[in-house]
Amino acid sequence: MLIKLSNLDINQIGLVKKINCSPKITRRLYDLGLLENTKICPIFSSPFKDPVAYEFRGNIIAIRNDDANDILVETEK
Image (cartoon, rainbow, N blue to C red; front, side, top):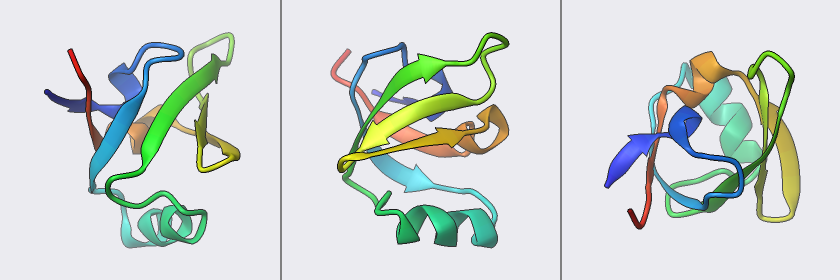
């Protein structure tokens, strides 16, 4: 099932299927190694739920919900 990255629960693993962010953000994510078919997992949420820290390929980065809404991931559920 495809869902938005922002809808993943903490510690739920997703597989990136589509990145629809702005070209500038997409390029930054690609440079950090966030590509299609990469496993990603939210590990920490800020007090107001924005941004959220995500772990992938040994990296931990914070992604704002506006950008996470533009990333589609596949889950097992």
